[in-house]
Image (cartoon, rainbow over all chains, first blue to last red; front, side, top):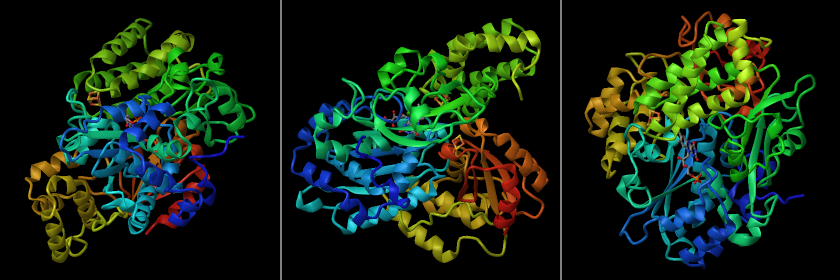
Length: 422
Length: 174
Ligand SMILES: Cc1cc2nc3c(=O)[nH]c(=O)nc-3n(C[C@H](O)[C@H](O)[C@H](O)COP(=O)(O)O)c2cc1C
Ligand code: SF4
Ligand code: FES
C-alpha cells in the first residue's frame, strides 16, 4: 500500500492548520531546499521525472531550467488553480484540505526559479479554497516562511491569491497572465515565451497547483526515490486520479502514476453501479478524446494514453454509462466550449457553434449522412487553425466519437431519431 | 489583497438608497489603488466589490470602479463583459448556479433544471418576481464526485435529487 503524500492530511476534513501540516513533516522540504542551490533544486526536480499536472504533461524540471534567471527581474512564479476543465476536481481538494502544501511547493518553486513574488490564480467559485489559502498564507507569514529573508536564508518571496471572475480560458497560461494584469484573458502569441517575457513582461514560470504540491515531497525524498513510486519502470511519482459518473464510489485517489484505467475505475471507483455498464470515458477532462471499453487496460500515464489516441489530461475520469447517448454527451461538451470560447480567433468563435449545430441536427434526427463529412471537415479545419489549445481540445473528443462510435452516430441518421433510451 | 472583501455572491438587489460603496470605503479603496504600481491589476477585485455593493455591476457601479482605479469606464466595461461572474444586468439576491457540464449531465442535472424552473416559475437566465433568485447554468464546479451539483450564492450543494430542491429553496430564500 502506497504511503499517501499529497493526500496525507486529507483525513482532517478541514484545511490542515500550520500545526497539523508541520506535524506531518510540513515545511521540512522548504528548509532542505534553502540549504541547496537553486540549480540543485532544479536538478532534483529533473531527476524526479515530474511532468506538469495541468494537462499537457510538460517536464517540470525542464520548464524551470528555461526560466531566464540572468534577466535582472523581478521574476514571478504563478500557480494555476483555475481548474475549470469539466470533470476535474483535484486542485480543489489540494487547496481545501492542505493549503500549506501548495504554499510550501510554491515557495520552493520560487526559490528554484529566483522569483520575488508568487501568485495563486484561483477560479471564482472556489471561495472556500481561497479562504483556506489566505488563512494559510497568514499563518505561514507569521511563522517566517513567507516574506523577506525566509528562515534566515537571504531568500525573499511574497505570495498572494488572485481570485478570478469566471471564464475557462483564464486557465490558458498566457491568457492567465493577461487576466492577472487586469486585461481581457485572451491568450498571447508565443514567442516571446513566459520564461523570458511573461507576467508584466518579466520572466515567469507557471505550474498547475498539483504540480507544485508535489515539490516538497520530491525535495524531502530526493528526486529518484520519488520517481520510483510510479506503477511501472519509467513512470514518475504519484498522481491524483478522480472518477465521476455512475460508479459506486466516485472520488479522488492518490495512486502510483501509471495505474491502469481499469483499476482506477473498478477498484478505487468501486466499479459501475448495479444495472449500468461502462460505455466510454473522458480520461482527463472534457477536452480529452473518448476511450472505449477496449482501452480499459491502458496505463493512466501521459505517454500511454497518448499512444492510444487520447490524452491523460487532468487524470480525472468521467465515466459515460450505457444510458448516455454519445452524441448528446458531445453536445453537452460543445455547449461548454462554445460558451467559454474567448472569441479571439474565428475558427473557435465561429467554427465551434457550427459543429454544435450539426451535432444538434444529428441528435434531433434531421441530419443527412453527408453532414457527417461536414462535421469531420470542420473539426479538421478548426484543429490546426486556432490561436490556442482551447479549440483543438473542443473538437478532439468529437473526432474520437467519429472514430469509435460512428455506428451510433449513423444510427441517429438512419432511424431519424436518437436510438438511445432517454 | 486582504483589504478587499472576499464574499461575492450574496448579491443585493440594486437600490438607490443604501448598499452603495460608502464615501469612506471609496476613499479607502482609492488610497489602496494609489499605492499600487499598476492600478488595472486591481480591477477584478474592485468590480467584485462594487458588484457586491450594488447587487450587480450597474453603469453607476462601473463608473465608480473606473474612478477608483483611474481608468476610462470603457476599460471597466471591456473587462466586465469578459467575465461570466460579473453581472452587467440585475440579478436576484441569490444566484443559483446549476452545473451543466459533463459529469453532472451524466448524473441527471437536466432534472434539476426542470424542478428549479417549475418551483421558481422562471426560465434559465431569469430572476423571480420577488427578486430572491436568479437561475443560471455554470460550468463544472469541481464537485463532479458529488454530481449533480449546484451553488446557491457561495454555498455548494452536491449529490442532488429534484426532491431536495424544495427544501434548499426554502432554506436559502432571504
Ligand atoms: C483553454 C485552456 C485552459 C487551461 N486551464 C488550465 C487550468 O485550469 N489549470 C491548469 O493548471 N492548467 C490549465 N491549462 C494548461 C496551462 O496552459 C498550462 O499548460 C499549465 O498551467 C502548466 O502547468 P503544468 O506544466 O504544471 O501542467 C489550460 C490550457 C488551456 C489551453
Ligand atoms: S482557440 Fe481562439 S477563440 Fe478559442 S479560446 Fe483560444 S484564442 Fe480564444
Ligand atoms: S461536471 Fe458538474 S461539478 Fe464537475
